[in-house]
Length: 215
Length: 257
Ligand SMILES: Nc1ncnc2c1ncn2[C@@H]1O[C@H](COP(=O)(O)OP(=O)(O)O)[C@@H](O)[C@H]1O
Ligand SMILES: [Mg+2]
Image (cartoon, rainbow over all chains, first blue to last red; front, side, top):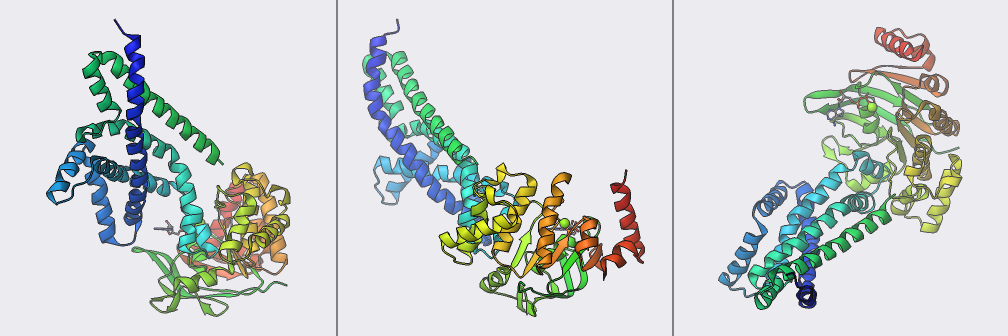
């Protein structure tokens, strides 16, 4: 029989574990945006070595599963003498992995802008910095918002993978909970509900931002 | 009277890879006059126009604005970005697709260059932007985003954006070609006013009526060559060159019914 009592009792500890899920996803996307912007800038730069580096970065990180990246990163760092906390390793790996996708999101949005947008700015004598900050990026950000929110939702789900390096986020916490209560079904359904709740909130946030920036 | 620039093009050549888009272009554009460029699609009209503000880099020859070489300090030595921007500041450009910035209101579109390029305070820039919008008959649209405006209104905002910078030369690349027929008139009338004020204007156009009535000289282009430059009457009503005759015949056939 499905035990409603166990189902509801699971929420307390799982909500508590959700702070790691959120922390890793939010810090991960933040780091991903910073690195992804740099990678995108390198990709669009006039310097062939930088462009090649960015292209390799993107194809490597998109081509290797996040789980494998996590394990490699977590076990490789001690080999080179770096003993980083699991949390740091997780955020950095998730951020680096996201940077590859975010760089491509930016690149797509920038490429989607008509060439005339920048030309109109260049023609009145605006500097390259102004052309980027006043004309290209504000529009690229608006265009990318749906894809960025989508990426954040993917990260929330992908963050379940960091359980392999011992972080007690939602998925790992529910495994522990299932093992002590012997009621896996109730616990995992509760976990599913929490993921769903987080992502529905993010989707709503996305719709709100899109609505606000619509012209 | 406005301060108006002159343009001198001498033996200008432009290649896209192996394809030669401009062939030995010689063209004098006197100050305060209107020069219209006509010719079949793909003949190099836009390329020629865009060489004047160096939006397109010509490969050889000279383009001089008021005697000043644009784009190069010397043959094969590019001008610094800073010098080029200084020269572009006094050249306005209006595009076929308007190219208004959709994330800014009409007034912000016009004020942007004043604030960023001319370094005018925001309050002054807003005031001048409003004046420029009033001049093109859009005082009541200054708070609207481009997406809320008709094509004709958008193009007039684009003209306001250019004239607010107080240019001495205006370049128009088919300014009415993207407009519904009933919206063409309002844009041409703004351009006619500007011409009447003594602005130097170079206008790529398919509006033969505008060319006939407003231009001081008309240039006909074909296959990268500037075939002929002469008075509107000479080009449009008494063309001697067979290529011009054939172009005008096609034009008239298409526009009669
Ligand atoms: N960026 C470009 N790369 C390659 N070819 C181009 C480019 N821009 C224009 N061309 C070619 O140069 C020729 C002249 O183009 P354009 O000046 O736009 O003609 P027009 O404005 O008279 O229609 C055309 O054949 C066009 O295909
Ligand atoms: Mg053209």
